[in-house]
Every structure is written in structure tokens, then in C-alpha cells.
Amino acid sequence: MNIYRLLEEAITTDCIETKEKLTQQCWEYCSKNDFISSQGFVPRLFKEPSYSSICTIVEPKALKTRKDFDTNEGLATLVHAIAHIEYSAIDLALDAIYRFPTMPQSYKLDWLEVAQDEIRHYKMLESLLNDLGFIYGDFPVHCGLFDALVHTAGDILERMAIIPRYYEASGLDVNPQIIKKLNNKRKLPMVQRLIEVLNIIYNEEIVHVEKGDRWFKYLCDKENLDYSVYFKILDKYKLLSKYRPHINVDARQKAGFSCVELEKLGDIVCK
Image (cartoon, rainbow, N blue to C red; front, side):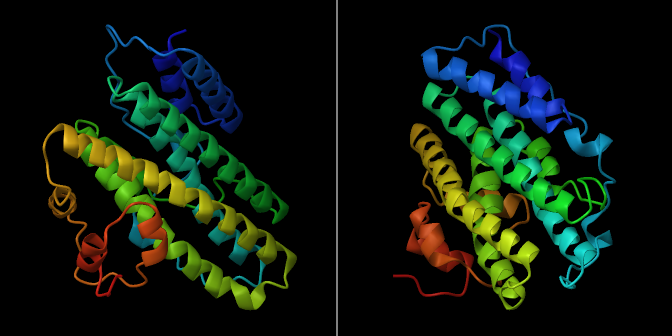
């Protein structure tokens, strides 16, 4: 089996069922074979995200602020935005294997597990979105995560720093804040469903960030780099900000962040 051909098809298809089937095939093959040959394989650099055939892509500043959750449409805009992040995360997890084929077998299995989780998250959100009367693609999206995929395509250390240790870790900060905003409307059945999905995503994303943290440190150790190179990478991508509200100390520590890192990221005291 050529898993790189399957991964490429999974990354480029806009059909979630096909992504799920191909991801499962890759998982089954990798879990039974200790060595996956990549001889002669050259990964493609994708020019557009797989959802470009489904969604209207706009600049982030063109997206409307999501505040009204009392109506189906208002709640659907929030569900759609989160579903888009999870959909994007599927392709990111698969691309982490596809683009860096010389990494150990345990690395491949880790990111296939992440892809399976992200598929499940997306499908839960898609079901809720459908029950609200909408489908994925009904609202515009931005392609920030795909852009990060492209920009880090040539450097796996940067990929591990930017995707799991920055973007996914930022999700750990934001998720509880979204739940907090939804709590006063949790008596609404659809809101309650969304909160339940967000709690599932939150707990599983801690594991995803931990995997990224572990592989980031593995690569640093391999190259004799201090872990503080993380901040140089963030600075290179202009992702360091002087003020980051709502740093989720507990979740980030569970995922592998040190107190020194957390205090540098935000105006907090960490123990």
C-alpha cells in the first residue's frame, strides 16, 4: 500500500466520508507495519485548501462578529466557524505525515490518531449545524490554518511549533471562554449540545497539543536546540504578542508547556 498516495487523496478531497475512509486505511496499515517506505516520494505543495470547492474564502477581517446565539442562524455561524477549524485540522494532521515522511512510525500513528479525532469532532459539529438548518459552506471562512500549512511546509520544527504549540494551544485558551459565553443560554437544547461537543473537543485537544509538544522537543533534542527556539519561531511568523488574555495555564501545563514559557506568553504567574 502506498500510504502517501492515500494521504494526498485524503488531504485534497472535499468529502468528509472519503477523508475518514482513507485515514482509517492508513491507520490500519501503519499500525500493522513497522516500516513505511518513502523511497522516491516527493510531497506536493498544495495550492488551495480542500474546502475551497465548498466554502467562500475571505480575509479574516471580513468575517462578521458572532454575538447573537438566540437564533438558529446566529448559533449556526458559531458552529460553522468551529467546524471549519476542525475540518482544517484534519488536513493539517494528515499533512504532518504526508510532508515529513522520514519521521518515526510513532509520529505517523500519533497524527493519524489526531486526524481521526478531528474527523469525529467535525462530524459532531456538522450534525449540529444540519439540525440548525445549515450546511458546511453556508458561511464564509478564512484560510489562516491552510496558510500556516503552506508557510511551514519546508521545516518540521516550525510546523510543530506553529500548528499544535501555537494554534491548537490557543484553542485551549479560547474554548472555555466560548463555553462561558454560552452558559447563560445552556437551557436551549442546541446550545447545550454545542457545549457538550466543545467539552469533548477541549479534553481531546489537550492530548493533541501534548503530542505536538513531544515531537517539537524530540526535534529540538535531535538538533541540540534549546526549547526556547519556540519564541524565535513565533517571532519569525509575527505571532508573539505583548498581551495574550486568558492563558489557560492548567491545560497548557498538561500539554507540556513550562511555567517559564507560559509567563513569557502572557502576563501571568505560574506555579
